[in-house]
Image (cartoon, rainbow, N blue to C red):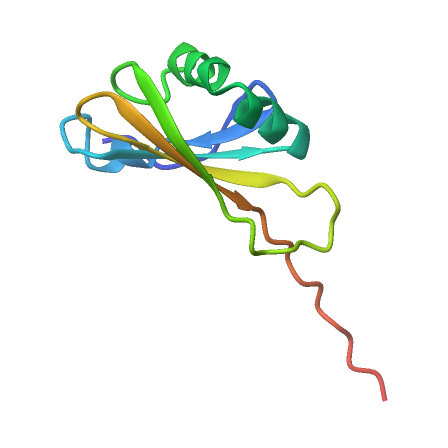
Length: 114
């Protein structure tokens, strides 16, 4: 069993959460933090995203079908181009589903001045 930690992958951050249970437990889940530019590129080219996932061994075996791709659009971030968290679910039949969520900003602590 490997430890769960973020790894730098071509300008993004990847966490292979499935490694906690091992490669024989399905579905496998991985998280990817990406910039808005990377998100737009990946969402407009699902086949290219699948090739990215396979090139960096995101899962224990290659993805052969990618889709559907679901984006949470009901959240309106204050930032015009937010960073994104992609949640990738990979099934035993090598199909991958992607959920894209805008990354929430950490609130800054407000000082208490009187």
